[in-house]
Image 1 (cartoon, rainbow, N blue to C red):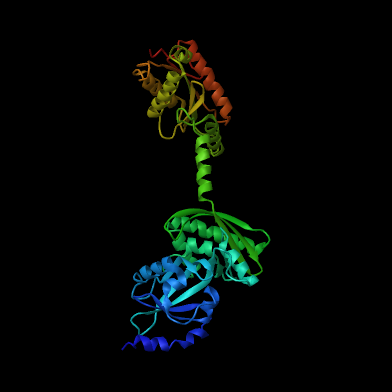
Image 2 (image 1 turned 90 degrees about the horizontal axis):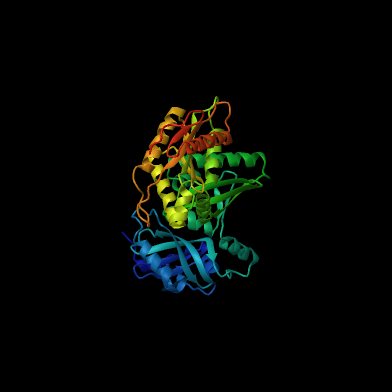
Length: 427
């Protein structure tokens, strides 16, 4: 049988013996009916034990958050942790609250305030230690301190905002990895990096370890965090900051640097980087690698007769037609002006010649639409293959270039394979 609420309230004098900040909340009216000494130390010495609205203690917004949250707590009492921005007697604060129904009552809840409290205005206390603690809490980086058993003994407000998952306050390391890395493969990689960092610090405490992870945070968003771990005595300091936007911009810049702005195909720089990577990772004994070099016929006449705007439209059209005739593994790049190159990995010379003919036919099959009307284009192409004992992209380009000029001398609109005579005109 449940006790009357008033009797339960009168029987709460023991709260002042509790070292954690606690207040007792009566619902549904959200009245604070008891506070203890520890709470008054944290949130303001002016607080009394007299009943007060919850909004007096933590502000209207904070009170509304608590009232809404308490209705979502399951009967078993799980998922009972709330982080909320509040207005307190000491100033704005981010409070981590743990709500527990008082046994044998219908409407009384014990609310514990986690002392990892962030006071945004820096006026938490005149005490130097508490002021320093407030500064640590306010830093825009995450700080976790782990003991020798890798259990968290401190984490600041930045950490809470990222990792205070609903229903969890102090996660074991295995549970944390499961929440932060839902993908099992990514979790395995991150866990190995963590274990390797711990082992390295145990061997050499003076050498900080650096990791970068993409983690799922408490708000459901994935963020890129740059992490640095150090060992101080028997404890580990884990410091991290959000570099998501920085990495996004870096990726965008890499994409722009690697893309020809007019045609959207690879830039010359990107082409060489990819080619060098293919050569560097080639199996022993070399690989089948061919290159096509393509030049738009009489391109100067297009620019002179119709203007550079039409010339640009011709370049864009040729790039698109080439891509449509190539395979997904082929690398198309604008080499300069009206010249393009295509790298064909795992391709023999005979097959490269066939692909070149497909490209040539795709370009010349029909006039391309431009602002000046339909424009009939043709291209000349040189094809070369890499000798297994060379592994030199410059030599491959040189041979394809020689074949290209052979195609032009033979009348254009044709494919010439290196060290082979010019094929008949496709006109």
